[in-house]
Length: 393
Image (cartoon, rainbow, N blue to C red; front, side, top):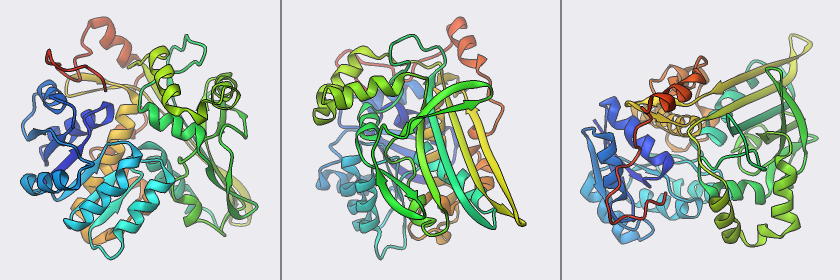
């Protein structure tokens, strides 16, 4: 069995722990600095090969000691992006593999620096976007003789929106604000450049339903660097229901909340609910020449909530957790193939979809699953809380 350490027992970390332990191939140490939180997640899973730890992963000495005690060959960071550089450096010192979920560009640059000279894998940006979307786009790109444009679009949306933002906080609020407030990488007229977030608003129709999409930070991952000089235009935009961008522009720009992100986080978490009834929309469009003709190919997929280990998990939890687990599983089974810093687009789409974890991305998930589980009262608990915990994720 592979021994791994997972830092962070929040919404995504909880499912990563369950997926790995349920597979029977992984022995997982789940760590969180909040009292009893890792223990509560493990209790809810009720699976073997899960071990709780409680310590501050941003303390080098505590993290190093925990790595030694667990015997981990790989570490997964499910912590906020600003923790990842330090964790990657600690992984490098202990000569173990490193994986994370960050969309943050500066954090990824720190992981790249930490990876230099290592024979172990350092793979940031696993998950959905960046992550799976990068792998899907790269697969389509390989089908063309020359490229004109590459469009990546992803949205994690409530199935039944009923608030003014038409949104639900189904993942990290800090990560969301980061996407809405930081510069975005793209390729314009063949040259890599930075563009503003919340700009480039467009309408997009998928399966007959109208959405909007606009620039957000981080989703392009390393694709712009990989394909610089090979494509005229490449960009990433987030998909939302119409009207969302206008409301976020008011908050971020009009009310200057981009300058006070902690206040914005509190406002959003107080006003916007969570839901397990969501949908993840994945859309890639590549235009270029094949055999002398201008053509376009698309990858389009809607992923809905799914039952895992007898409990309901949201679509954004499933796609993010499954993406990381699949990448790590592929790497740890062929470690000599992926030494040093690994970009998501180095992996093959078919290999990921054929992986047991990556199979959660395969088309065919049913949107009725969440409604059936809620109606029957079989959603289950993602944490079994003790009396002395706050219950915050």
